[in-house]
Image (cartoon, rainbow, N blue to C red):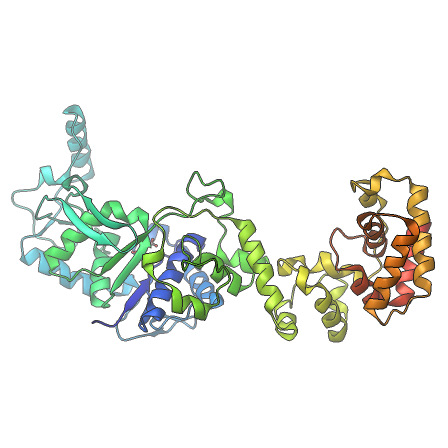
Length: 481
Ligand code: GLU
């Protein structure tokens, strides 16, 4: 058996769509699962679509997710690996070599036509109600190919192709998908169709994993594999990721953000990895939280579903919360750097850690940090509107609100603020005394102490605020009612 080698072959055309990253991740997992190599190749032959800096974003994305690659470009501009170069623009010689092989076999020809002539052929085909095909206009005596014209593949056999896809199963496509496509453009650079087949062969790639949009072109690739006498790798085409409503492909408007945007919005790479790996994959059990190591152990293409998985951002948020919960406090502390609010960021490390410990279980993304913590570091402004727009609390008159807060002050004055249990029992007594429902009473006290929509449990909050600040805030709330 050949050593497993997979690749991620992005084009540096802009941001890195989550769908591409899922493919990269699955390729990575196949490589690691098979104790093989994961190769990064930059497909930069489309100069028109080239975006400066895009490659760096790809590398940073992979690095952030922990998808370490064995071969390919590095962030410092160097390259590693024995099958380079890893930029297609640096591999012109390689493509030329195989182009010459095809020319030698009579399977490639210089395209002699001008754009005007092609336009005319198209018009003819249209008038005859036929699809325009280059293969119907093959020149009898093509000019020698000097690189100034496109080199076209002379599709050798118009036949039906059949192949096995590791995800989609047995597939076939008829000859209508085949035409004399361009191998090398007049700018001297190869087309994707040609370049990737050559590269995958030369780089000894064993598993070609990519999106389902490539299925339609498979006959083209297969005819090239045959003509060049290359062994076929395992092919795996993965279904599109679907928009949250499940009806269409995930597009930019549905939050098909780039992965770096998720990073900046406070998602952990572990959660992103977990979420992306399980878009359209599970291990056959109910397990949802997987570490990278578990994914490497359990991931196989056979269990990737054929139909498109829905991009459920709520699930990502949930997973992120799960991963945040699991972190050691010191680890979390390192990761929230840069996410504190204006008051929080000025606090001491000890103060920040104490607050972090209390809110950790409630953090869904690191970006929630300010809204969940600022009121510990600075006095919040009373905002009675929050009370008035609360379904339960709005049923009571303001006089009743202030009365409850006064009762709370009274009950807490005597409590031991060093003990969360003691605070909890003081609150329970208060509940009995006032005859209120917990959401009403505790909801009100929470607002008075934090003026925030979400906050940790009351005993933890009060314990952290301490007696003086707790009582002072209750008083300010009453005063501003
Ligand atoms: N450069 C192609 C893309 O970015 C790669 C497709 C493939 O994996 O073969 O979509």
